[in-house]
Image (cartoon, rainbow, N blue to C red; front, side, top):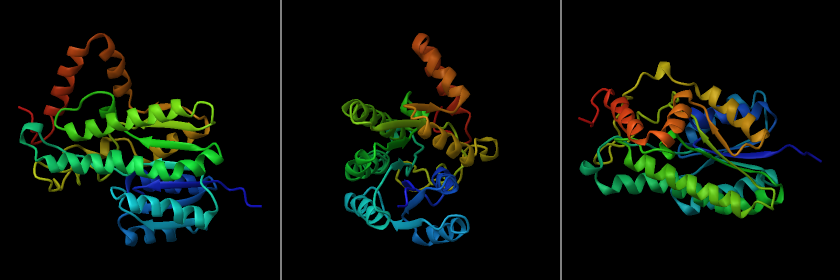
Length: 269
């Protein structure tokens, strides 16, 4: 009997999701990759098949509940079960709330929060059978408000509340729930970040070369899952800020403001 474990990774066509697909494949997992572009997944699938034949590509928009249900069902039908769900797919934004069209907030919540809820809802029965893991890729913005990213922070705060509560509800079921806050990671999330009217900003306001690599993040995600950690914060700056926020909240608010104001064409004044 093949006892290889099965993982689903959303947003697997780039960035952290792509790195996770490769990391878990190298560790011998059966990997189901989900993204909106099947063409991109097909290219990645061919590369991974050079060292892991147990790979499945599924076209899915996780902001749509039926797509999430289909993703879980197709994975279980193909691989015979499910051990790990990595809720990675997400979008960002960059604008002040006072200028923002509310449809942008809806887009952020539909993908970053509801996408994780939908996938977890349909995956949970199978994961509970194997006492597996539900993982949410979050951000420091889920612990403290990030100016210019109201929708992003709100969606990550909501994700934290959902996953923390899920963990407590299943304390006696052997379910592992982990929240991961990578810090700024080199990916296309800032290039596809939504502006005031929902259009993509098209370029990153930060130096991507100075950021954490997706491969490093994926390594720590796998390591944290194996150790069944409840939370991973990978940014040293983020760790320090969270500690200081407990004692000097006004000071940290000001530091956050100055940090985000330094970005090129920052909406902050």
